[in-house]
Length: 151
Image 1 (tube, rainbow, N blue to C red):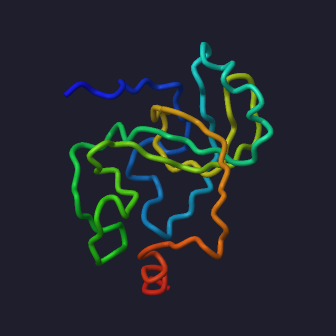
Image 2 (tube, rainbow, N blue to C red; image 1 turned 135 degrees about the vertical axis):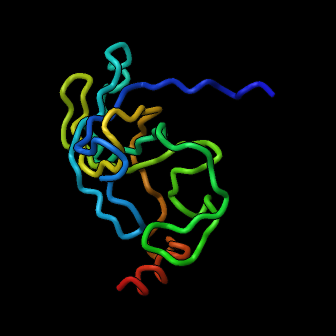
């Protein structure tokens, strides 16, 4: 079967995390690290007007993950869940999504807060965050029970 498309990095994350072992993990992890998303210079024009958004969706690659597991137990947890109900890096397609706060733009660099990726991680895409799900209708699956147990 021919691939639908061949992913190409549009840039790279610059974060305070030199390797996977120091990235905060698990459902209760706080992601408040600041860093930059350095977009390739030839694609910088695509950042036009991005400054008007407070938050961005960053699509990136778990480029250091090897293989996948269809059922996994989150860090700090005791109950296994299907990989598609978790943020595990061990996925059939090692694609990740993070929502970050845009602090400012300097040319092809986006200064952001909320990074949860290793320094040098390839970025596949960036989109403005536009949530249309009212908080009272948002369901969080197994997370409330996990948070209550971890208390």
